Image (tube, rainbow, N blue to C red; front, side):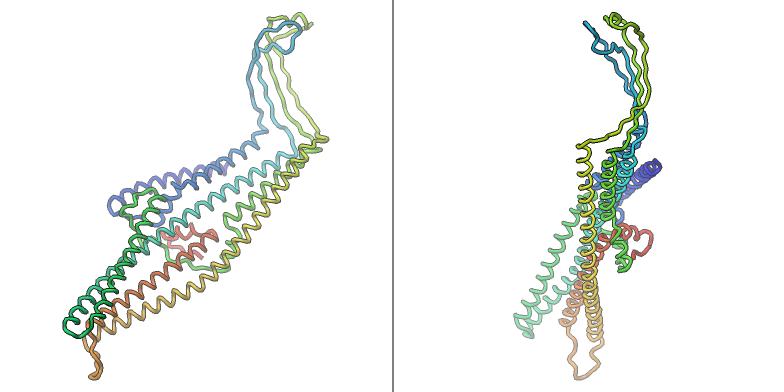
Length: 448
């Protein structure tokens, strides 16, 4: 009961925080149409149909556990059966009756309680796993939108350099310095930049639509807050191995299997085990009709109380049911083992890909830094000269080309970083750490 009250308190507190977050976001959206990553995740969890379904499963499992325990509490049923009788009485002339009964002792019921407790544990773990999947979906869409907006800003700068290069080539062609081919090449570069920008703009609009559907916010004008995105997680292989074997999804599968085994054990113990039940009954009999003609003694108030003891010596149906319950438990155990093995294989594959992707990101970053250094050299030589009498001076055309090259290498670096981040988030999802990563933005903690 304490766990149930604690869960209800946490859910109520989370609801209050979510409502406050919604109001804050709506106000912010009206002014800036900007939303932080953690707020987007909170809103998505609150509106997600999958999360609501998992919450319903938790409530159902909580009720099922209460049902297994409440069987020991005597019930109370009120009724009555007034009517007319002819000839020998076929029943009792009960005007009002009250019946009460409960379970007193059963070898199987403690196992059924343990099964319900394990089922509740599985439901809560499934809820956490669903929340992690929602967090991953929102995070991937959010960082993709953030990446698209960064790319668009870079492409706007590159488009300016490309257009300036077109103007320079047009002047050089008119002056007879360059051929028409150089001008077409510059125009092609400018057109390619424009094409790339359209691609990222369309992708950004698509991500806005997805985030709008996930969070319930208007998609138009929705932007990200780059500062709210936590830094890339520090992937610790040893810690990930421990987490991968104890993820909510895997733990829920094993908790479900444990619940099935408890149920099977309880079904088996229904045979050749005594069962004790409590029973009490009271009836107010009617004095009309002809009951007094057939009974020597008749009284209106009648009651009985006692215990019912039974011993199932042989019951083929129960025995077959117990075998079926055991088969269900073995099936659930096999599924849990299979889920664990698949997750381990996927985690290992992502970890290997992560090494390769990290190397690619490092190469792209170094190329971007090299292009920046070369651009600085070109700009310095354009202003101060090469410093050598025999060297050809740097032209404005070469300066624009250096600017374009630097922006292209920077775009490559952004793309590599985005691909690496996606892989890291999927790895965090597989190890059950994605929610910790989202929360680290506000706490400043580091996910290992």
